[in-house]
Image (tube, rainbow, N blue to C red; front, side, top):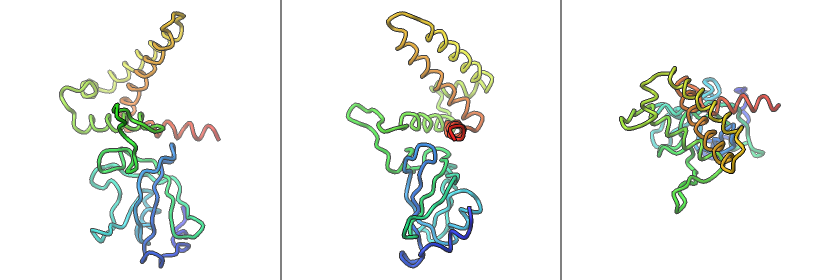
Length: 212
């Protein structure tokens, strides 16, 4: 990303600030809206992490500087009027301060279901992050964390075998069982990825590159 981007912006329209729409680079989900001044934009370009200007604190702040839920920049672009930024990023953890994937999340129908494309996975990813952070004693994920990476890897292997076995069955429940075992495999894989400081976003990035 080129620092010349800062020179193209019409800084006078909103008193030296430019609105920055943050979008998940993999899912295209809108995560949040913030504001940058020129210094925040330059720091964002240099660090490759989203930095905003806080209108309440009157200072620069990097998203996730206290929570750890940073936004790693992938691309930045201006709209046709040169007064709004679109930032595509890889979020590390939930973006919203309420623990949701997005500040615009659609959550909880009357039946309690998570709605919206990718929201089930991103919600699960946020839950796994929370378990790693807080380690509640009654959590299955906590028990895996305490058992270590080798046990997590073993579980992924076991679930992979269960998926293969389910796929070979011919009875009336075979498809339902395959779906159940696949869910178990994905769940344990996400835990293993987190233990290695990776996430589904990293996996999706690889797939996205391969499709090109």
